[in-house]
Length: 508
Image (cartoon, rainbow, N blue to C red):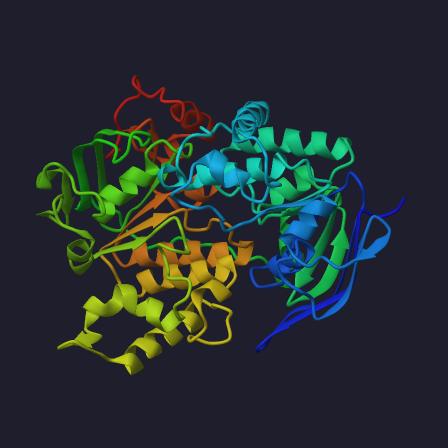
């Protein structure tokens, strides 16, 4: 059988970095093929070459038996190649339908496309309102838009870069049903994910990259998640460890007291009587299906949205509900937003400049003058301590892989030694080694007495590092359970909002 895609000796160099080193990759028709590797291994560069975003320096691309030159994404789409990017490519001020229409042949009927979006959304279990503006959507909802935008083009090769990072287990299974159906119809799928249980469940074959080179090929069904992870990192899998001398107290650091906050826009989620206490030295997780108020709650805690009453939010004994983000940061609150590019960092700015964005209140700016040497030294420390792989601290944020940028942002906040750290989806799209490093850094911070609040849809992650877990559903917060006193099944039920009869055990 002729391969759908055959890459031969693909090479791509950047200043100070050999991203792809003579990579060979073959994907057959109807095959679901995993592309594995650590952040920075060269996966994203390779799929961008296939999709026409990046030109290779050397090598050949063969498509359905013929050598091709994929000059740009339009040429890729004309061949039948579609791609769901890890970082969203959406215009905030446009609607879902308008965003999806971009890249489709001119002259299409927007009304017809809107109906098609609705049909695909329902068929594939990816609910979305075609008329909703992108800026009102949560991260999970934006991911659905990217997936639907690709599916409306009826691709022959579908490239998916971390498509399930912010989907619920139920949504993931529905997506897998869709991908298996597409594969049975002859569509090839090139699948990138750091969730190795998904790779085992979904993929027929796997190619492993490390430092830009192909280091292994295997059948995921014959491997374990552990063996796949060790192929990726080239060594034993790191394990997170909780401090044995860590003592949990009932000393509140962050208190939400009946927070009631109307949505900022008509399609947002109204926070209703949200009550939660985060104690010193404690890690608390908030689970939930995307679009149930996570974005609004993070904005309220961070100070981007002010509470109606200053007493609705207390930080280390002080009423801060009417304080803005800068005032809360000065009082000991650090924040890692769910969006790495745009909110967690300015893409076009260097890592040094991005360090200054949240560190300047620590004394790096005096009488209007910036101590650039000190800021650069801090950026270097973050890079070294969190193993951020990049040419140097003057590299632009957008030049880093997703996992390396995430490690930098998390490290930037943790090294400020905050009293309270709030994290939105801290390991989204991050490889197993980097995820373990981030989780360990969170545990180490809590061991110093800081309180940590994590918003995530990765239940395995929350059970691994959290002391208590609560669920947010339709803007309401469930009771918080000790991780040993609850289960994934109970939390799954609570995600549908069925926690009215649950015993309140926030301090249990």
